[in-house]
Amino acid sequence: MEQYAQILVIASPLFFLFVMAEKIYGWKVKGDSFKNMDMISSLSSGFTNALKDALGLGISILTYVWLVDKVALVHIPFTWLNVLIAFMVLDLSGYWGHRINHSINFFWNQHLIHHSSEEFNLACALRQSISNLVNFFTVFLLPAALLGVDPKIIGIIAPIHLFAQFWYHTVYIGKLGFLEKFLVTPSHHRVHHAINPIYIDKNHGQIFIFWDKWFGTFQEELDDVPPVYGITVPVRTWNPIKINFQQWWYLLQDSIHTKNWVDKFRLWFMPTGWRPKDVLEAYPLNKIEEPNNYQKYYPEVSRKLEVWTWIQFLSSFGMLTFLFSSFGRLEFSDLLIYGIWVFMSVYAYTELMDKNPNSIWFELLKNIAGLSLFLWKGSWFGLENISGVLNYLIPVYFIASSFVVAYFVFYEFAEKRALHTNLN
Image 1: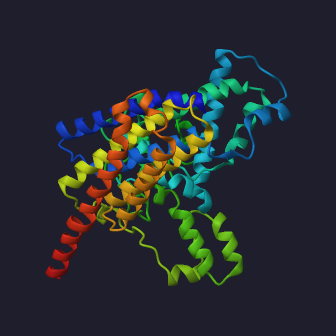
Image 2: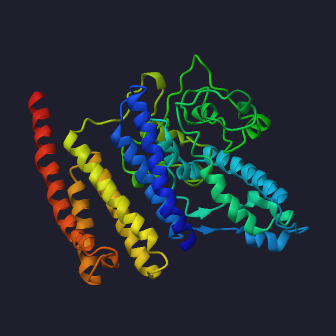
Image 3: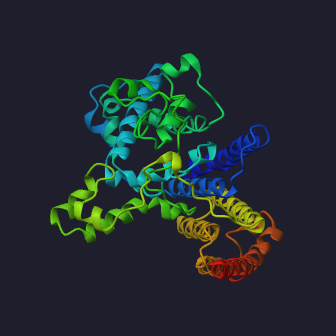
């Protein structure tokens, strides 16, 4: 965990810089709108995923080390050829895991967050799951285990394989000629993120596109069918924690509502989107039927709220970076408590982004928890060793943040609701 956290100390600011560079390019050169809220929601999702992984909040039903120990037919040494073989096996494993995530109701929940943005950009690449608490798909590494590929090889190439999927989440790179034949390119992945009927559930490859061509899931991006991004049952929230569990919530409700006892259990493992007939009729979901006529989720917000959201986001980013840098120093119990507080912070400010009047209570809960931790520890988890000034600004931030959010909820939001009521 400590090694991964140290990687994140470096990687997180780099990803942020790439995201900002793309947005500024789109804004200044292409004339696209900046869409602050969508970007902050995506980056905040990246927060939660990185934090979950760094804290090790998840289990693997079947570990690769166990597989190698039990089923290896031969043991091949650590060579560059074997690294290449392992990379190919890992990519094939990723293809099938990805395809299953798209194919089964239960597993769709742990991938839905990645498709939830109605934009397609580098920021949405960071929309990663916190609901994949149990890893079922190590079994797809069985070919590598049979060959006795050293677990250290997998450990090295796995993060490289993951980070290599970042670059192709963009609309600003067109088709890439010869590379389109074997690599996943931005064009291929735009298809994957689109909800146009011809594009849905296509191009599951992660690095190599030939898996899709071989297994019948390939679709080229068509000039006359511009991709429309998102998911067919839109999330309509900026809160990544809510999005992470939306599908399971729908499945639970369907399981309760259906009168068919067999359906109560089988719906979890039916094809994605399947619902019992009695529930489908009595409790219809707001599903997008005509993608080209769909109006994206983007509630109107004031410039003041956008500025404040950036302050909240950057404050949380700083807090998270400090947490990652503290992995070798703090006890796991402290890291876990700190991590829970970061989750609370993300939940609170993204609820405010949605203009939820209840966001004030989430904000107060987060700030009371933060002040309590500060008083209990006598500092903010040792921040005084880096900067005494920053350490004592922490409680000031908690208090000021409560008043600022109260202003938005009790004045700005209330005023707009009253104006809307009068107009109606």
